[in-house]
Length: 344
Picture 1 (cartoon, rainbow, N blue to C red):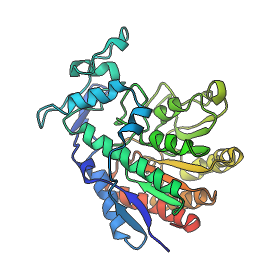
Picture 2: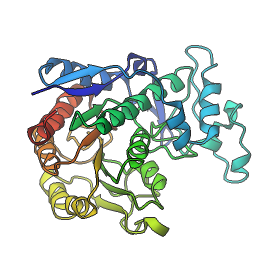
Picture 3: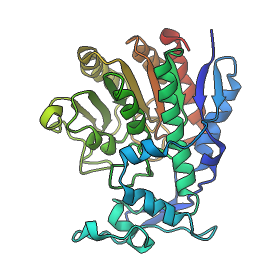
Picture 4: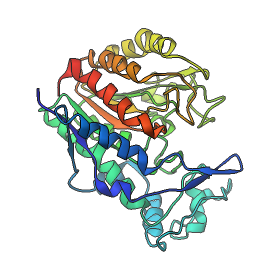
């Protein structure tokens, strides 16, 4: 069996946030380079099954298609910051928000929705290569020679919207991939991260060619708090093409899986997509510091097998997962389960 292509660029490790502000407290930042390094070690340790490949170029046209010029200008402005200097948005104006100047980093709060997603000189470089992994993965899937492709996108992306960054997300890698595939057919996006992918939902809110499904911690209790509820089903042509499934903290794999099998996957099959994009977060793991589910490593293999049975060409885009010690094992478990039914 051929190896599964896995995209990653070394420049994704150049961005190193050290801390974040969470409810007024300064804490170690969960989104560290150790996350990607753990996954890389695991992939290379299973070299008979997975091949790590560098994407060739940053997909600036695809990024511009998914995000406003203000965000790109802001990140380019941040790229001129002195090495070692970091800016955390701290002022979030509710009025005149569109008057923010993206060439002035003090206006960063006009384009951000939290205080835990910093900017520094390497933000643009790392985020653009993260997007490149997803975009090139989608292009490879479209060529048809592979049934399964993995994008080790770090920083993650599913919280980023067209106009705003936040939730450790700068470019929405999942959206960039899905928008590319959408030009060639119907796409289903299945988000299995612990946190709701608010940026993905808003990007396809009025779209009937992309079905978005998210299984996540109840936003009444968990980030992003203000969006991700079951009554949010899309608008206009997109009405009925956005599905949210919310769970309380402490949910175990069996209870979560029952909803996937009884509601989410049947919805995918009814939609009949040409492509499946899985936004793969592993903050559902029982040791994750910012998740609250109780999944184990072996559960991800079972999950991967069941998703693989859909028989759809599938791109897996890395999202969350912050217990770095086991993150690589969890990612390989999911991908190996998918390989059981999809092949490489």
